[in-house]
Image (cartoon, rainbow, N blue to C red; front, side, top):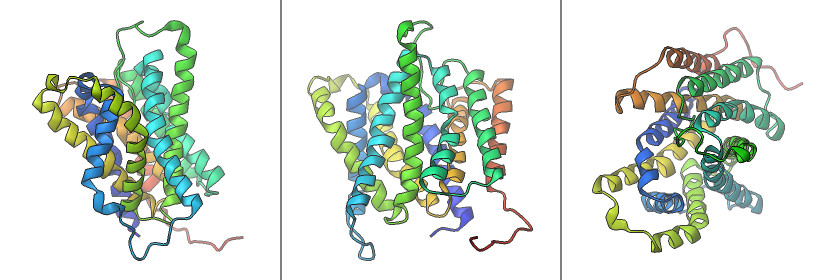
Length: 313
């Protein structure tokens, strides 16, 4: 099991990578259809971690419950989250999505308290409040971009009468992402981070295959520029391999509620990539949101001095 500082580093790197590849892979969503992009992502990622599928000698056989959790981890965290998020943005706006995604740290804390019976300290709740405020402020400060780096169309392009449905889909995406963190924490008690990463990617590939193959048969691959294929490889390895492995490694030593605070780094890193790579500029509100977001992580991870562990009861 990694030490706490190493676990914090893994969680921070995971969410930073997510924000980075989301910001850099925006052109992929324009060059490739959604289901084809998802299918290629899982396929390329799977090729990169075939050895990870092999069961280690020290790992116990998977029980039916663990198998169900692995499937739910992939179905909720990979497949359903993507559909809810993209469909929700299409029916509302990216700003609405960004504000709604701000609820992820709070949803993770509540789910970990309810399902995992974690005792969530008051300081972690305070960090969750700061994280929610930071993400929401990022969304408001940067119109046209959501917490996951998605883009909305022209103002008013989405169907106004279905905005309520879009909001429900975005709430569903928040719950899916929170479930991903909570189920991941549960799985780390039985399986190693590499095996979890490979198994949920395999299920993602299976779920995306029917629509992925259907879309591929009708798609003109010659229309995709060579640079897009390089970007696709980076996106696949980052989204399916590196970020998941880092996240699961961190969760082995950190409570799920505390780990959920690190999701605040997703919009922060996406904004930083926009400034450093894409030539965008920070607004004063974004700088304030950046400070609040970093403060939430610092508050959640600073060691508590002067307190000793007490036995249960």
